[in-house]
Amino acid sequence: MTALLVLSTLPAGLVMVQEGLSRPLQNGLFLYHKNIGPIVLILVMLRLVLRVLKRPPPMPDSVSRPQAIAAGVVHALLYLTLLLMAVSGIIRVQAGGYPMEFWDPLMGGLIGRDETLAEAASAFHALCKTVLIVLLAGHVGAAMIHGLIKRDGVFSRMWPPV
Image 1 (cartoon, rainbow, N blue to C red):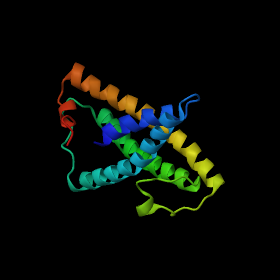
Image 2: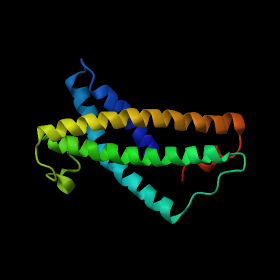
Image 3: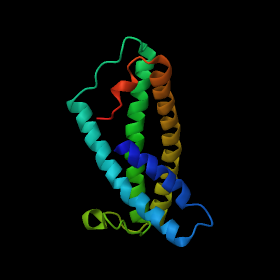
Image 4: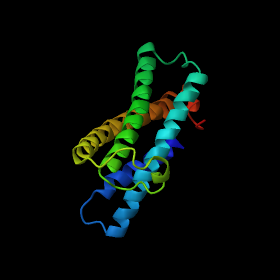
């Protein structure tokens, strides 16, 4: 679920800021993007709790120690980046004085309007976007290598997702 939401929110975020979009399309993309972020935040936090409670199975013997370390680092960075991206998005929206329609009853008004904070959160959110795209590309590439070329059981550890 997290992957599907991220893979739909990322392009929405990239498109919604493009010049020349019709206002209804742009508004719909902003509405979707800013209201899905907190859901991603909740799902990632739940996923981290599950990772603590239920450790993943060990890597197959075909995965070298450096590869296993790299996989662990990429996973940790993915979780961290998703957390930071969601939090910076929430800060950007609230500090910018914009509503989070679905979430306002639960967390509206946590941060007052502050244009300097909104701009900093926006810049940090953009940095996280770039980091996330790079991490996702590496993760998908590694999954494809393990699933299509090596066929060593690593891909079956993540699909179907649980």
